[in-house]
Length: 81
Image 1 (cartoon, rainbow, N blue to C red):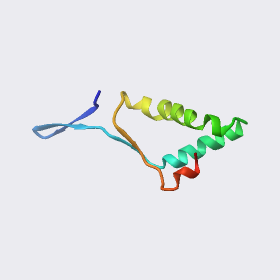
Image 2 (image 1 turned 90 degrees about the vertical axis):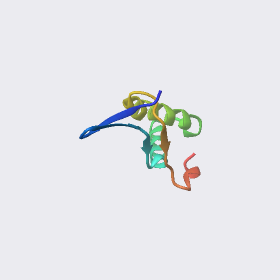
Image 3 (image 1 turned 60 degrees about the vertical axis):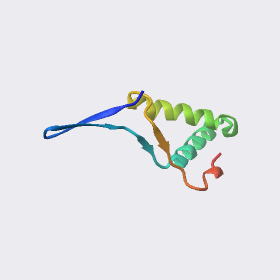
Image 4 (image 1 turned 60 degrees about the horizontal axis):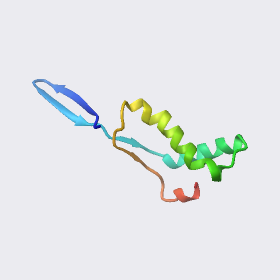
């Protein structure tokens, strides 16, 4: 399913694709890791699952469909995992 936004400019009607870009994804993962540690859960066991669940519920669910998306992380993102 591809999402489109219709744009009316004077007499022209355009449809443009929606692509979601999520910046600072590495910080998002750090925040989830701290949350798991605060809850006395093992971040090594639960981090990737928790990140995907929260990302899907908090961000993708509000986009009304599965649009293409990009998650940007810094080059040292491996420090988080």
